[in-house]
Image 1: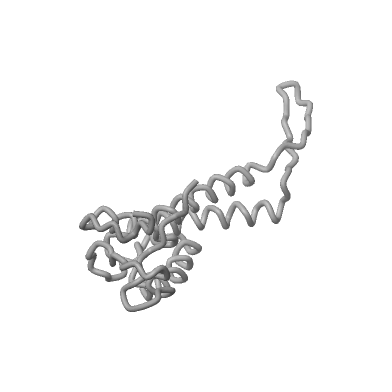
Image 2: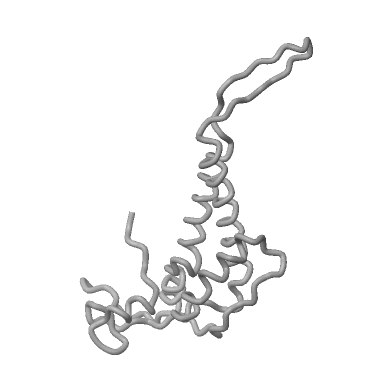
Length: 160
């Protein structure tokens, strides 16, 4: 699997000169979005709202947030909230739990099963990685979008 493209802001931080990356190639700044942070939705859960407050300042400092990111950022934050709740449950109750079943005849059986919160945390973790790959918390898509707006220069390919 190939390397994930770095956002323009990160390429410029380690660049050799103004507007150039560490290899001396010009860095395409990406699409010209208005860089204003979105307002958080009022319906975010408490954990999601805390995550929103945690990540938006850093994204804003790097000029990676735009108003259009509100829905995706809210979805990321709510997914984080699910991940945290599931992980807390696994920490509290363990990887396995006792399942008690009462049969129609009144007898009770008990068996150990995998804690459903493990699967929930795992699924939320996969979703979080997806958001990170597709959205500003690992903003490789900004750079991928800017490649689409390129004027056809071969400067990005040192072997061209």
